[in-house]
Image (cartoon, rainbow, N blue to C red; front, side, top):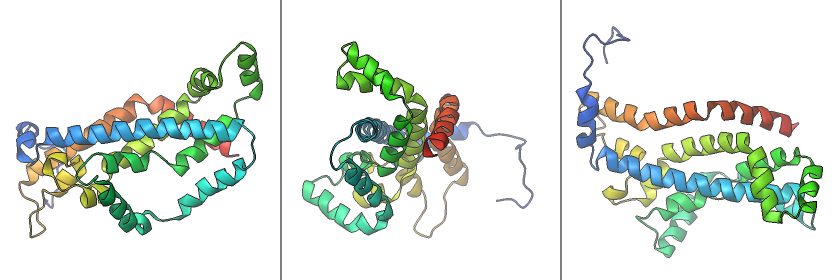
Length: 239
């Protein structure tokens, strides 16, 4: 807020990070736990469903496979805001208001991820799968023991991209979650604004924001190598 920016404060207040856990309501620890549960569940199921679907569409030829693939791609042309009201009505009808389910289930099916998995898996030679079949490998074994290990780069890339998306999502939790104990970290951070649109205790707000961003930074550093390999492979696969 100062006109003279100080990139390195002369007297850092490290206790702000300790106070941040008791400053938010619900607590920052609870909000981080909620976001972790939602992100891990949604991304894990998305990777499983998308990789299986991409494997089937890439390596199995059957009537209507191209139609199914084009139908999946066509869903990417529908803006998410258009489906927000029907989505809320369906969630309310299912009794999922104030639960984790509407934050997890919609992200399980991702047309973008299915498309990229299919394009990547197409580059894997069919001879490798045929050799595994001759050795007695089952069809699911082909996916689990051959396709998935070879697709680790794309798994890391799509996993990180979707994890960032789910972790930072504010709109869906804002519409669905009313119980403070189920607030995700972004929803809890948004609640730090008072009724006049002003931030209270700016030092603690910035500490909370830093702690909320830290898990994504750590995750990016961990999978950075696979991330580069994944996007390189995806660029090659698209060609």
